[in-house]
Length: 268
Image 1 (cartoon, helix red, strand yellow):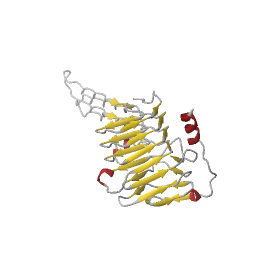
Image 2 (cartoon, helix red, strand yellow):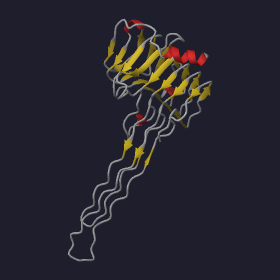
Image 3 (cartoon, rainbow, N blue to C red):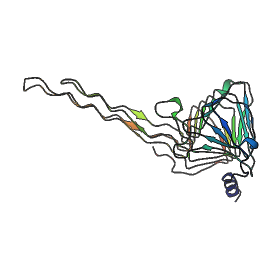
Image 4 (cartoon, rainbow, N blue to C red):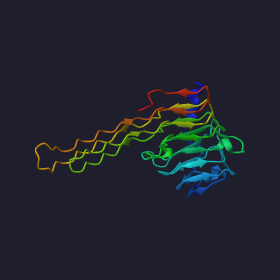
């Protein structure tokens, strides 16, 4: 019953919007309060290595497509059981690029904290890109993060289709199709990071499928001899779907306690 009540509280925007604040992109810091909510992110935003951004309970952060909030300093997003903080996409079909935490292990600031936050409709960057992993949260070289009573849902990495191989020249084989892999960690991607993730729900996140490109056609035979043949077609490429629909760890040792994960999340 406690978990059910918690999940219901996260699905409700507790306070009516008093105004809205447009964030055009660039460096952000200071405090985002309920009076300015919702905060609409229209460009990539960075919390620099010497800065802190505090987000008050009840605030809604709407991120437009292809935009992200990257933390290289400190993020304090601390909601309450009755007044959570919402990070989501303004367009839930296209999604946004979610929250990124980068190189906090080398930062002297104290840990970032996300408590009673809902993170949804994040989508990894297109292949190939460093940020193709981690639809909701991309965490790299950053152990100083505490997630407590968060609800991470409906995030994903992208479907990938490899490029076709180029056709061969005269009597030459075609090139092989591209080898591709989809991004890992539909909900959370951790690389060289050991965050604390407790009392949270990680549900209905997924990774994308990947299909290798088709091989290029073999070149035609323009020779006059009947013993000359056209080149062979190129081999098709391979594709590997992403791993870790909910969470993916690479060289990481996260502390996970009292979390709930719904299964059947990976497409790959």
